[in-house]
Amino acid sequence: MTSGRVVDLAQRHRLDERARDQLTALLALIEQDERAPTTVRDPALGVDLHLADSLVALDLAPVRTAKTIADIGSGVGFPGLALAVARRECEVRLVESQGRKTVYLEELLAQVEIPNARVIRVRAEDWSGGVCAHDVVVARALGPQPVVLEYAAPLLRLGGTLVDWRGARVHIEEQRAERAADELGLALVSVERVKPFEEARDRHLHLFMKVRDTPAKFPRRAGMARKRPLGA
Image 1 (tube, helix red, strand yellow):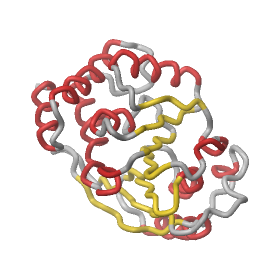
Image 2 (tube, one colour; image 1 turned 90 degrees about the horizontal axis):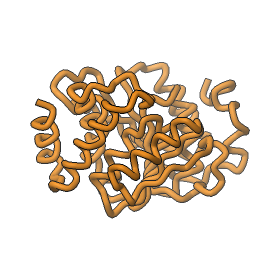
Image 3 (cartoon, one colour; image 1 turned 135 degrees about the horizontal axis):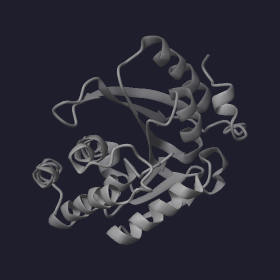
């Protein structure tokens, strides 16, 4: 069942046999390793919740053409790992501050042999080396949208795109996010309703483009984005 679903995903996104095998290996390693920082270790669930939910971003032109992608708050590695497998010509940075998770991610990269991805052990707001260095920033289940926007904006080049995974739309939260985006030099491009797998409900990808330089005062020092979110 799981192998069939991976084959279906590979066909949907025009991935080759090597990519298909790597995606299957990722699911198997997550299942086998009790240290995996996720509650979803069953491959039958992971094929949808890890792989399909990540790869749906390939439907977006900025993701298909990006040369550099940063996955902030990478956790167990998605969507970044799946996108690195799918886009071997793209450099993917998995940004994660927790040491235990970064060790786990580095082991996954070595075992599955994904040379175009690397782990960056740092808080997103402290990563000076990543400023203005990315075509795309991705974030999934990271936090309130104004917080994600503040983490992502400095890391994007002008014209770059943030792709933020969200569930059901909430009008007041989107208004706050748009106010935060304006402060950060970002503009909402679109909110795309997606259905990465059959049982998926109320899933949306929010796209923001960097249209102006982010003011030098951002990002604020570590913790401030969550303590005093923009756009309130």
